[in-house]
Length: 395
Image 1 (tube, rainbow, N blue to C red):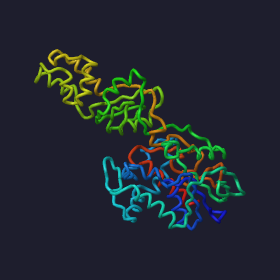
Image 2: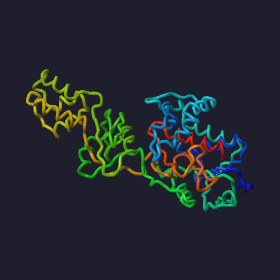
Image 3: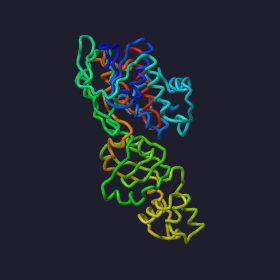
Image 4: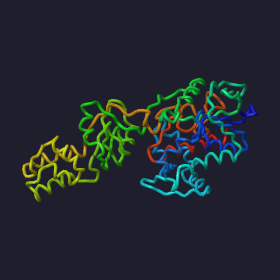
């Protein structure tokens, strides 16, 4: 239990955004307390990126984020960039490498980033209190009072950094939304983002039969497209392209998938018709698709017909089935497997420069709790760093 009762800054949430904000505020000489109900700090950081933490992306820019106000993130992202965070990583002596599409990972383990945050915050004098549930938050004069089961604390600046609802097994809660609503802030309805699709039983059966099959695909919905891997599973569709497009999908929307990205299916089938007229369709399709997928599409279209018996029109219809597979998900796997939360505290309630709430001076909201959600590939961590840095300069 802390012997102090008043702090300049109390941060709720010992995750990526909360700890990084503590570092920034501490560097300015602010007395900082970080409170979290979890037993360990930055657990989402620890498990991220397969244990190596995809801590940012070299291509991070406002266009890589989903928000009710796509301009809101510009200020923070421009003032604390991916290169600024990379400088912190290198200063700490953390070795890293770039994977596909600008994604940066630790060479060793995500614990390197956890240590950067925890050690860095403590080095700036921040107190980190874990296993500490917040009971109530209230106004206290010009500041705020936070009641926990171990004590009552006041502060001039209160920062909400408790994240969203994704990955409940890690202890995710809606605390930030509850407190924001308490002080009159509007909440954009939270929903699961970067999450696999699920399907009704009839639509699921042919997908289940392909479980484990992966392709390079283009997934499109509502004017957005992503070119990455797609994976058939026992529950539906997953893989990077699917997770990405899920952030733009709404209930009732169709998703269009090119299952042979970069291939000219019609051209190849037409050439094979001339070269191997006796070859059956599914075997011909297997030259551009995984064998099980080729067999299924072959049976769905023209069965075991020989290539010689397939007209140009039929070949074009087969190519359209491959390049423009239209399917309507029943839903998603939800919070259990979602990597992020879409929606959150309405950006109209916050200053894009400081992350302070206009209706509640001294109250700040950062990271995943805000209605700013990045693409897969390190963008959400960059938003955590950038929004935390912005708030850390003024709290």
